[in-house]
Image (cartoon, rainbow, N blue to C red; front, top):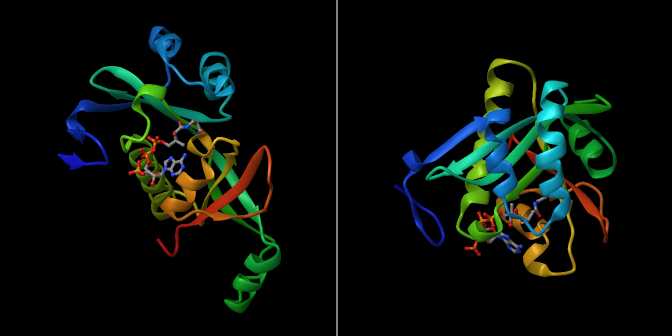
Length: 183
Ligand SMILES: CC(C)(COP(=O)(O)OP(=O)(O)OC[C@H]1O[C@@H](n2cnc3c(N)ncnc32)[C@H](O)[C@@H]1OP(=O)(O)O)[C@@H](O)C(=O)NCCC(=O)NCCS
């Protein structure tokens, strides 16, 4: 049993599968007030996967679709403080490889129960798997969706996990990164 914030989750009740047309009914029932994240799931996620643009993992809890995360490859251009940091370590490349979280969403009725954090652990494990076995991967990147309502402003969720701001922006999205080397 993993004790997460508000419910006891038996990890055996969680099923993680790549998106597939057999789950179309579950996609329709998925509820999020962020309409763009619902339409991505319904209209784009499978097509992007077929086009090898991103891979979407569906998260089921007791057979209900409670979240999804889409991943793709990325890089960070080294500028400013990051450039200085790596220069001091004699790393002089212009950019470094990363795994990007393209989309991440937890069903409205399952928020603040710890699932988002579990999904982030899953992504960190995937990035480490890639970095240790397949190809260099130094960072996880994402564009955090900003919202004037704090409970919907995802930047706090990511900061809590250890992500840092790559570029300051007040509105829209804020690019963030997580350094896998210091994890
Ligand atoms: C952001 C999101 C993925 C977080 O998932 P979640 O399952 O609700 O998060 P968790 O329950 O794992 O949260 C773990 C901790 O992160 C922090 N946290 C989560 N959301 C937060 C918020 N909006 N503001 C401040 N802290 C937050 C809290 O410390 C929380 O622990 P607590 O509930 O004990 O205080 C989810 O709320 C969501 O799907 N939001 C809408 C879509 C979205 O913004 N996606 C991100 C796109 S980049």
